[in-house]
Length: 164
Image 1 (cartoon, rainbow, N blue to C red):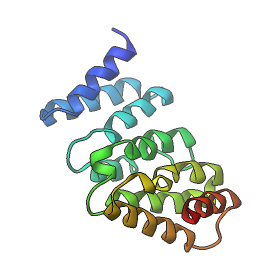
Image 2 (cartoon, rainbow, N blue to C red; image 1 turned 60 degrees about the horizontal axis):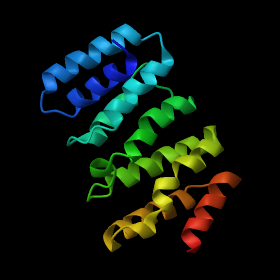
Image 3 (tube, rainbow, N blue to C red; image 1 turned 180 degrees about the vertical axis):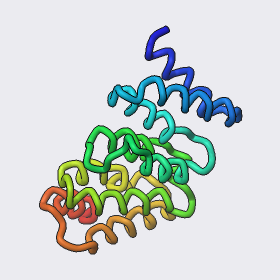
Image 4 (cartoon, rainbow, N blue to C red; image 1 turned 30 degrees about the vertical axis):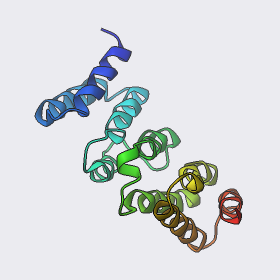
């Protein structure tokens, strides 16, 4: 009967093998709270943070949702930011999570340089990971650096991370 419990229950269901029930609960939740942007941010985050397989596909699908806008920092944090905290999917062995983040940072840099610089943070922590992940993370940092005319904010974060 309160939002904390409702979101916790939704997160449990979304992270369970009961996919049909989760889809129904997500649709019901979205319909009920579609006019409340802050609650919808939580709805996005619950899905982006789900540790089930195919997390990147789910996040790509969320980016196409009518309530999502890459121009809205809260929406970006709710989807992209939550996904970077999704350890099994963000740190996928094939590096797809890192490439996804680099793509979004490149796009964000033209719209909101401060947000782009903040969103890059998970890749700047590359030293904490094994050699394979380090190489993939650094490769994406290099790709961002070579992507064109970077904002001063993003350039500074990149240079500090790659100078180590």
